[in-house]
Length: 381
Image (tube, rainbow, N blue to C red; front, top):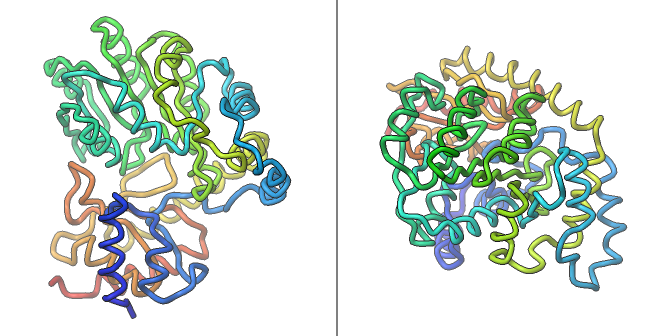
């Protein structure tokens, strides 16, 4: 049973600390509301690796504890070198941060531009950070029929808007579809010609294939105004440690770096990053397992009439039947069963019947589908 008084107190706390209840991944808050231990809750509102962190990570972090009496390495040298070796780029092209969200805030302050265009739907922190920094931006809405991916026609509209910066996600958020390489290359070609900044949120790209993962590493060499954001949080399931990085031309990053927070990546997160990047077998196993579970879960959701969108990430965007309960109503019902899912109406361009669920194991899928089936049987309010 949900503690309503506690829920009201938590809403006030969110307001005080600048949080936002529309985000997924609030398992601690739900633990308090439901009066259940975290271990009893299946959180599919946050899209994390269903395999959990790489085996041995706890030992690597424990060993790093001996260094917490000192300030963290300000330049995160070991982590940047490990990431550079992993990606095949220079360490000077990488800027670590306390999760990609912190880097989004930094970029919003740095881009003192008049006309930013944000392709929607998109991660909500993009618009929020631009608004906080006082940046003027417009949305370019992509179509659900196209998998929420930009088409050549969308690009025509984009350049008619004469943007000073273009911002989008790949894989797309919250659909998880991969933008075709010819579209990405077209954006870069036009951006170079027009001297336009391009910011790409690739937080979930590690779940995609080799070709998709390699695009940005080559593109930053062609366009000095390209900024790519990536995260280790999702793929390595280390959300509580917070670790991400920006990738760009070295000269470009040297201008951005002073705007970052000193010691923004703590000692334990740096050690975790170095360890995770060395787990090649885990990475291969993750892509294989998530791909298999994604197909299995999509098939199960389709049988329930939820129409999941084909994607390449570790989440599925579903459209609920229009004559049934809304995604918010469904999420509220499943939460009472200890299963958290994400209503997607907070993503600009999505509606009240869009629901996002993280990909999970075969065993946990049974718990998910059971909770969803019961939720869909409820009469709309």
